[in-house]
Length: 395
Image (tube, rainbow, N blue to C red; front, top):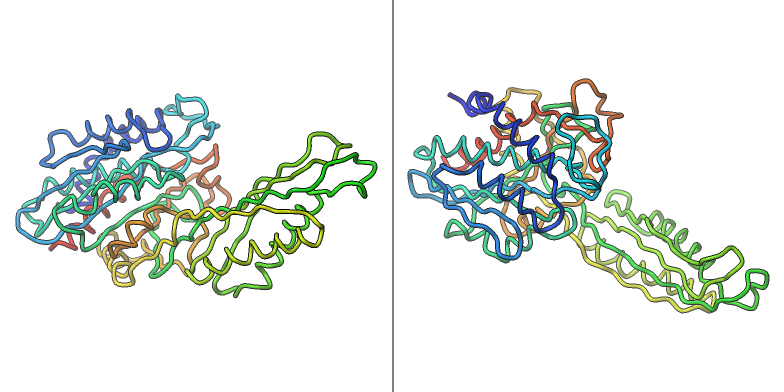
């Protein structure tokens, strides 16, 4: 029996687990309910299981029937601080928290892969590490798990690592997509405080207005990107937060803004950090103001190994037939902390369309939306691909 057939036999159980996870979403690095449900799903399987110390992670190792290398499969488990707006029988029961990015599907598919591979462990010439990871949504959970030894859980570094991510829009349901090289951006943060001199709004010449200078900075940063960086090595700078003042007739002492910065290359990541600071310092000097600027380094670029990306494509074609795998022409500006794993181990990150069939992928609410909905029917295919990647890599 193929992994796809075996996964379909587990369909109802996978859906039940996914719905259970969806009703109790948890945030950050500490997910006690989620961890408990994962451990229950793995109970009885021939796995070496350990939990994290600084986070609610679960690492499970399946020893193959013959000696060989290790392969790592990863699924993230955390939710988002989003108030769900869907009318579903399994809607989130925790106010202000939602699995709006589909991590409940990732966790379920990885648990399903553990069951599929456990049933055929004697066929494996090597070991499989199952990485159930909290804290992907900005908490560097992958980095924490690496620090706690997930990459050495089988006794030797994996020769390959694979991660998967569902999307509620863009891709039709059941379509896998990946690419060689960069697939997701580095995500950094730029924080600026413009320091002026407050005064009466009727007499701006007696003050040093930080709001006007701050607004000029925001506009200048957009021009800096379009005029200073190659369009074929994209950079995005988006100011998402701007705060200044408390009344219409008061010029404040300072204004603050924050921006997210997305890049795909180390050169541009270094260059944009320098140029951002230069731009705001120059504008501040022109206005006779002071400015404090800091650059917070976030997730690095997620870079697929060329050979492993091609292997994912071949495996998907063999497993599901032609037309189910799509080579993405370009990366996306989202970021992923699976990038930390791929900095250490060659591997690939792959997307899976999970838009419900009654919605248009071009217009459906996307991941992180309070109205995002994911199709349960992709659970079996995701679990089967996880299992087949590990099985084929170790055969």
